[in-house]
Image 1 (cartoon, rainbow, N blue to C red):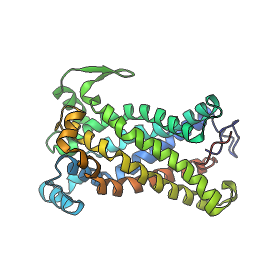
Image 2: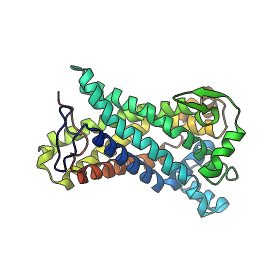
Image 3: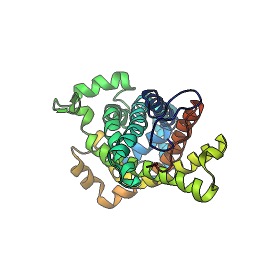
Image 4: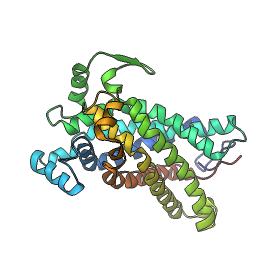
Length: 315
């Protein structure tokens, strides 16, 4: 993701900012996001249950004990298909479109600060990515919190469609309301997270090369470049987690039918608890997940002969 400028040819003739480049970034984002979210499904099951029933699942340790005792080990992998395919779709859109929008806005908004370009590029990409994620998330939360609702996507999608009312909304296509009623809270959670995550990642990478390693990226070994990627990824994930926790709690309440809209969810949870409920489990989840996503994503780019991600956009 080196500087934004004219397309550069890498050693395998893949041009940065070409269609093939964006396709590779989308594939890398899909693979890295889908597999990492799949791997932490047990923690996600616990997190969602802590959000919708905080009295029963009041800590990480006791929460796991309750799940295992009442529902068995298989309950920890409930909703895995929604994690794999939903976050795979989201990751492909998020990473691929971020690269596209960053180049586009850098060319259009000449003279604007780099932070502004990072913010609007990540927001634009996340809006599309969450539309792709939303139906999967709606089914996943029901499957994870209601043991008898469905086993996964195959039986969960038609069941959710049949159970909910027939209100419709127009997004890009005609969508069933039951799958998209959590879209605005999802944007409320993921837009601030994505904007801060990508922006802090970009600036962290630049800071690490300039002030810590004091070498240019191309002067560093692949291992060191991936080390910078992981350090910047963890920093960006931790920052994004804190600001996105309130909306994440609202989403869980909506999809579990504890509230009919975001205002009811906030009132039910309580304003102070919006910021603290499930925060510990989210930090345990998101920091390593974001780090692994950037690691896999940049590993794919390196294997394709591309530079690793991050750094300040060149004018």
